[in-house]
Length: 147
Image (cartoon, rainbow, N blue to C red; front, top):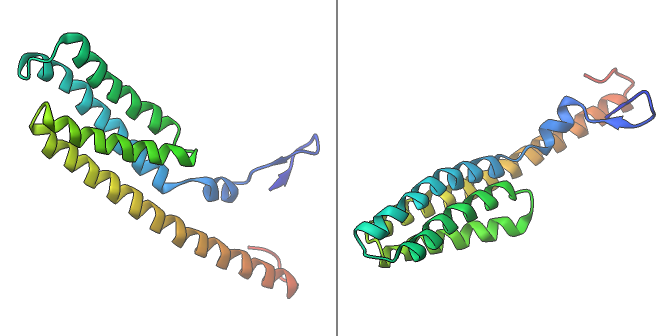
C-alpha cells in the first residue's frame, strides 16, 4: 500500500494482484457460457418438447438469468452454492430436453473443474505471496532495501 496525498492508502499493483481470484474468473466464464446454452433451450422446449411458451420462457430464461446473476455475485461465497444448484438444474432439464443430460453434465464438469482448479491456484498463490512477504520482511530486517 502507498500513501495517497489525502492520507488514504491506495492499493499497489501487488495488492491488486493478491485480490484477483482465478476461481472466480474461471467459474464466471463457465456460467456466462452456460447462460447462452440454457437460454437457447427455450425454443427447443417449445418446438420439440411441447412445453408451453410461458413455462419454457420461465425455465430457460430464468436459468440463463440465474447464471448471469451468479457469475456477477461470485465475490460472495453463497454464489458458488448457487452455481452448483444451477448445475443440478441444468442436468435436471434433461428430463424435458434429453440433450441437456449431456450438455448439463458437460457444464457441471466444467464448473467443477474451474472450481477445483481455481481453489488449488488460490492456495498456491497464497503460499507464494506468504513466501514473498517473509523474504521481504527478512530483507528489511537485514537492512537491505526492499525489492
